[in-house]
Image (tube, rainbow, N blue to C red):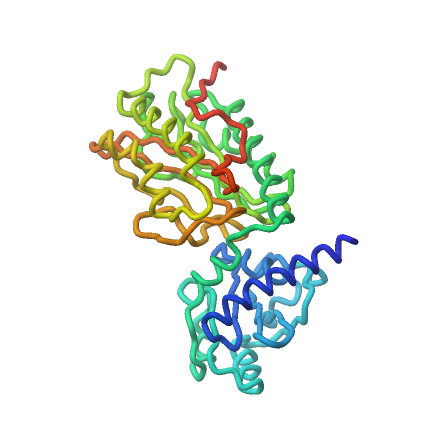
Length: 375
C-alpha cells in the first residue's frame, strides 16, 4: 500500500475504536477538542492527520456519517491543511457551526473530549442546547492500545529522547547553567523533527540530593554535582515519550536517602517487568512498583505512571484506585517521584514502557542507575 493508503487505513481504525466507545455510551456524535495553546493538539492529529501549529480546532465524529474538522476563521493558515484527510470547515464561531450540524442531523447526545480543559468558552456556550457528555476518559481508553504504525512512531520518539539524554549528560558539568546544558539536548530534539513538542525541565538542589520541584532550565540556574533532568518529547509522528536518568559528578557523595531511593528504583524496574502484564489493574501495578519506596518510608509526589500517546498525559494512570486493566500494546510513561520524609531529598527518573503478552518492556536501553559525569 502507498503511504497515503496506510495513513487512511490507520485513521479508519481509530474511527472504529472511537465509534465503538461512542456506541457504548449512546452518543450520536463526538466532538474532539484540540488546542496548541494548552498542549492538547495531539487529539486532533489523532483523528485527522492535521497538526495544529497555532490556534485550535475540533474534529466532529458522527456515529453514522463522515467526520469533519472545524477551525475558527482566523486559523486558515496555521498548519499544513492539505494533511487533513477529511472535510475542513472554517467558521467565525466553530461552536455555532457544530450546533447547526447537530440540529440538522437530529443529534441528541454529543460527547466532548476536552470539555474541562480545552474547549473555548464561546464554543461551549453555542452548544448549550445539546446534551453534552464529558468524554475525556472514554476517548483516552479508545486510543490507549497502540497499532503497529503507532508503535513505530513511539519507538522513533524513544530513540530521539534517549539520545537527547546522552547529549545532556555529555554537556553537563558542575558550574554550567541549566540552560546551556539543556540547549544541547534541545538542539538535537528540534533537528530530529520534534519541533516545539518538547517539555524539558530539571530538578536541582545540593551536591548531595535534588529537591522535588520541577524547574525550567534557565540561565540563572547553576548546576551543582547532582541533577535530575526531566525529558519529555514527541518525535515527527507526534507520539510523546519520557526517558531520563539521574546525573552526578564523578566524585559527588549522594545523600543516604538518595542512595536508598536508588535501591527502590532498581526494585521497581524489575518488578514492573512482571507487574505490567495484560489483565493487571492499574491499581495493582501501582501497588507493586511503589512497594519498595513505601516500605523505605518514602512517598510519591507525582503520579507513578500514565498512558502516553499523542497527548502527553492520557488515561488510565498508574495509581491508587484505578481499576482499568492493562492490555497488550498499551504504552505507559513510568516515573516514580520519590520524596524523603524531610521533604527535601528526591529521586525522579523516567521510562516509557510497552505492555506485551509477557509483561512490561522498557523501550529505552539505558540501565537503571545514576550516571556519573567524568568531565
